[in-house]
Amino acid sequence: MKRILTALVLIPLVILLVFAGPDWLVTAAVATVALLAAWEYLGIVQVAGTKTPRIPVLVGIGILFLVGFFWPDKLLTSVGALSLGLLVYCAFASPIAGVLQESAAAVFCLLYTGLTLIALPMLRSSEDGKWLVTFLLCVVWAGDITALFVGRSLGRHKLAPHLSPNKTWEGAAGSVAGSLAVTGLLILLSRELVKHDVVALAFPGSVVYWLVVAVVVNIAAQIGDLAESALKRSAGVKDSGTLLPGHGGMLDRIDALLLAAPVLWYAQVMQHF
Image 1 (cartoon, rainbow, N blue to C red):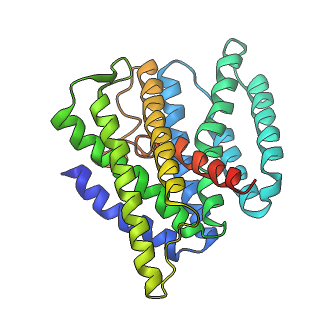
Image 2: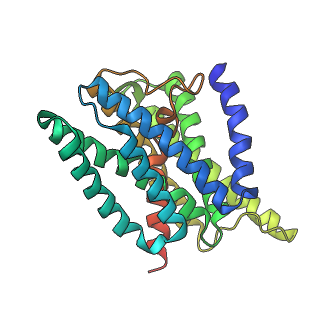
């Protein structure tokens, strides 16, 4: 019940932000999510025995989002500069025995929770960005919900028991089916809206293309979920935090987006080649 209530509160707020929020507010909101996820990730790292300095990493992620908003063409350069900066900081500020682990964790955190999520405001600020982000969220949410119910009712064959014992191949297949179904519904809805001169959703190109993209994004989301499970299990942690009732921590909630968002961004970039 806590999981459902939390979702009922957050989903309308997220959709409202996507469609009505200015670009700066969307960037600020995603940056906040990234910082919370980074804090939780570094907490997991600490449980595993590596006490990475958190403030420099959080500052680095904040700078990354500022660069992405004001100077998006300098994003790649800023990632390299910030990574080197974190390495230098850890080299001089960390105990010599922990420099290797702490610098590696700091740079990985910058990439894992910062660079991945910056794809969301980048998508949102692009042409037709509102419906692209809506498509992304619906594909991920539908896949997650379908996997939960199909896995519980029909799941028999374990997908990756050493990473996530409750996930099954049946649930994974159901997740893909759920993402395909919601994509089909969104395409039908967009066409109905166009008939009434409402361009809130747009799916240019062939239907097959968007169905393929939905499958790719869904697979990326499932891998993102499993990857976070692997990170937690390596540290002996069940949840990344307790911020969201019924969902665990922020990192637990957005782990699928950490791979799904950049995959959709790359798909859009490749489409325009």
